Image (cartoon, rainbow, N blue to C red; front, side, top):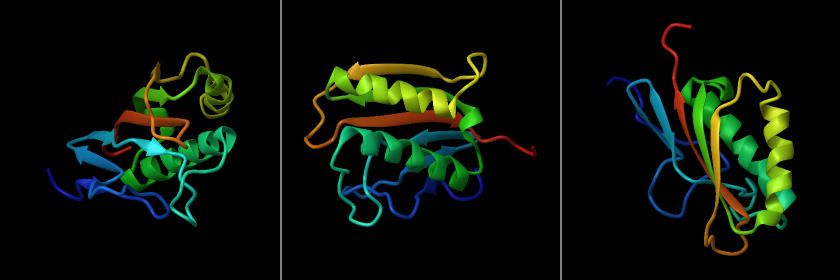
Length: 130
């Protein structure tokens, strides 16, 4: 493997010493991506803003890794409460409008620490020579 293994993006990070994602060969594995406000480093105040930020951070992360949303194969979403599902589906349809061209997705209830409403993790391909 050559090049940068750890991928991090400005305005989003973890308290633990881990990157936003790791590249292994042509695969990208994200760490948990949360709705963190870039200017404060704290979770956004409400679920709608957190969903917006999660997808913005995801876009920045795949861009930094040299791939795109189109190359995500699997997205796992952890939610604290089922009430956030409609917000996620709105963002999902915005970012993946073609029903014939979407990644696999799984949502599960999890004991996320307040005030987090959701976290996502993805696995993506980093295309070679496109």
